[in-house]
Image 1 (cartoon, rainbow, N blue to C red):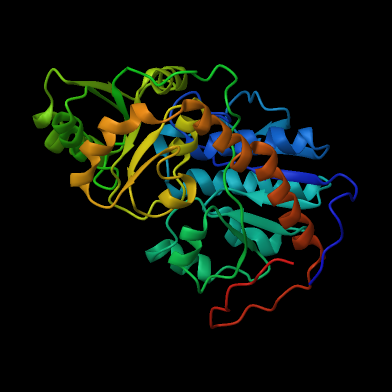
Image 2 (cartoon, rainbow, N blue to C red; image 1 turned 120 degrees about the vertical axis):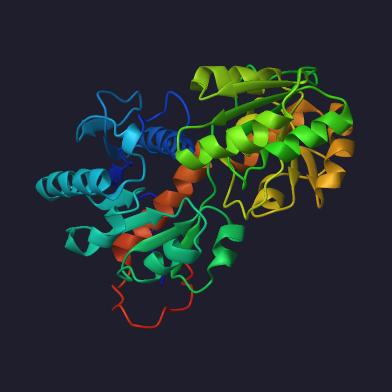
Amino acid sequence: MEIESANERPLRIAMVAPPWCEVPPTGYGGLEQVVASLTDALVERGHHVTLFGAGERSSTRATFVSTGPIQYDAMNWALPELDHVVRVNEMIDRGRFDIVHDHTNVGPVTAPQRSVPTVVTVHNNPRGQLGSYLSRLDRRVGLVAISYAQRRLAPYLPWSAVVHHGIPAQGSARLTPGDGPVLWLARFCPDKAPELAITACREAGVPLVLAGKCLEDGEKRHLDEVVRPLLDDDVELVVNAERQVTQELIGRARALIMPIRWEEPFGMVLIEAMAQGTPVVALNRGAVPEVLTHGVTGFICDRPEDLPGALRRVGDLDPADCVTHVRERFSPDLMARGYEQVYRWANHRVPVIASETPAAPAAMG
């Protein structure tokens, strides 16, 4: 189905963030950083965005509406998010909107009760319980994948589009390769494999900074039982750092290392590093080859044993190529243009009746 051109009237967008962190986040919060960049880019393109979140403030350019205090200590609990979504839906019903863009887990199941269409960005791996849940949503909900790799993990879901994340490339990006330590920046968990980063950097003979989120019980166990026994003078540990600190760590790192053990749906930290001119050394899983350019913005390794050699070669890469790569392929404006098309498509398509059997993926347009 064709949609009308992108030069229609500005859209009135209800952007629904989860209640766990501020938007943008002061510390860990890749999802919230995406929401902030997208919101500002949509406003820049002339749309009217109302950001529904939690907390007392948001520094985005949208109109901010809070449902209450930040629920960080109850992250991913059902009841706080349910209460947040119910409050948001009440305000959406009283307002005038053309589209709801929902980034919560609970919100999409309430989409049939909303008076306007809902678009949902799937931020996680769409397998297991999440895949089962998404397959049972009302078929009028527009599911957006954040990478083609993510979409291939669940081809039975009725995807409406693939829209890559975007981030502003820093004007102060370095001009020459960095000579600081290698940086690992993620959650302390088996999927992110900080222990593999330690092994690789130790074999390559380069220092390492492990900067990670460690708040949930599983993260604390992994840090205490797996990571701490491996630490020595060549590894600096930074736990639960504020965002300003992590950005400074990225800026002085010679490389970001990403030795993942799972099918990464996107990897926001990849473009955060490249936006500052920091190359990435990563294992070939999930969306990594979709985001990195091997030999230009970093090195993609098939095995953990290949990581040390790649770390020794990062000085051969030009930081300017990393920054250009982000500006040309992962800018906030490109992200906003992609979602703008999804919003208009969702407003113009004929509603599909939900069936018991998951439909084949739908192509936008």
